[in-house]
Amino acid sequence: MRAGQWSAVALALLLCCGGPARAEVQVVQMWTLLSGGDGARMRALIESFNASQQEVRVESTTLKWGEPFYTKVITATVAGAGPDLATIHLSRLPNLAGGGVLRPITTAELASAGLRGSDFLPRQWARSHYEGGAYAVPLDTHPLVLYYNKDLAGKAGLLDAQGRLTTIVGMPALTNAFRAVKEKTGKAGLAMEAAQSTYAIWRLWLSLLAQQGLPVVANGQFAYGPAGERTLAAIAHWFRAGYATAGQDYPASTSQFMAGNAGFMINGVWEVPELVRGTKAGTIGFRYGIAPLPQLYNNASTWADSHGFAIPANAGRPMTPEKTRAVLKFVAYVSTHSFGWAEGGHIPVYRPVAESAAARALMPNAEYAAAAANVVYDPAGWYMGAAGPLEAIASKFLPAPLAGQLTPADALRRFESEAQRLLKKRPPRY
Image (cartoon, rainbow, N blue to C red; front, side, top):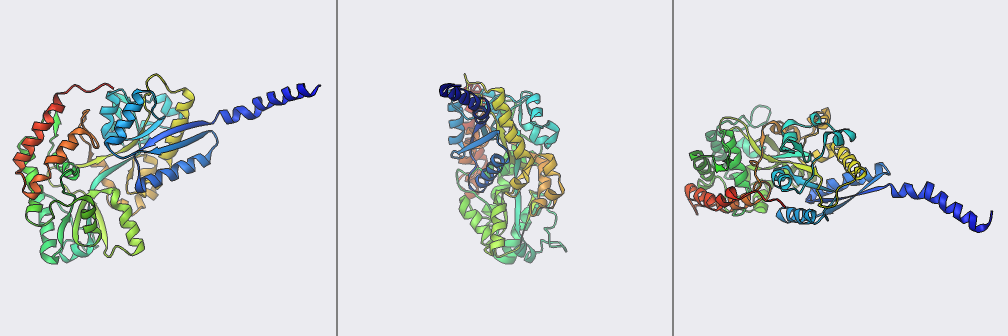
């Protein structure tokens, strides 16, 4: 055989044996809004997944949280230039799935990755659906919870013999707890974000309406009735009475609690890592506990959102079966390894992890894990969800009564007046 013939054979062997193996590696481009501690944990999961096998490589791009992220995902997907995978809030699913931004994920596709609907907590699995189809795989739920300073609560007579917060039921009981801390210790009863543009008051107000069996919106109309004003007035009373500081932004409110200057803090579970870190480092100078948001009315509903994985539709560029399998292989890996994700404070929703002995023993998460059974999301609607247009309007008006800038009735009248156009507008199809 001549030299030229040997070269041809060698090239054929290379293409046959060496080349295709590299070509078969599926590269999955993922866009995420996870930053800070969440971003670090997701990067660790990606790195461990990439190191665990040779067939799929995930490359992640982090975009700015909130509306900038969703605007980018929508515009890129419409142009067929979106990623293969995106992390989203399930509260945005009606907007994204209804607008044609996401593609459904079939039962057979999930099964090929070893995933079943029954593997996930039911409320979060239901929320990952739109008009009967699955459009996301849920990762977690992150509800509002009640943080408490055990040292201050103890001085106010609010702990039981085991050093845990005594059961609080009813709005008067929680208000009295805030008052007791203020009177017995001189510290604030409550630390809570309350500045204009905060979403925190919306989340608490929605929670307490749900505890009364009342949605914010139903059948295209505001449905909370007179209870909306009464509930907002009850929240405002904590601030008007001096138990909490009106106008505080997020950093100021969390710093107030972390410095030991407030008995309670109502916030999401995402502050758990900082408390754990501060305790280990010795920068948190008090004992703390965490409880689910108390039942102040008829049930224990509490606002929450969930992160999930979704596949953009990418107009004119349908995903190949090979890429779909690669995407779901990564999603299944994260689901089965979501215990590490729980260390960020989130409650995992993949049941083999969420119901494992290790997760049940993980502290302080175990103190509030029961909240997962009572979470409520923003009502379904294209204008709802994390950083969506209705939340933006609510954030303009709902904090105003806390500082006495508007009465609760005026705040809700202005909220409804501005938000009404959203309820009447036809859902966009992107």
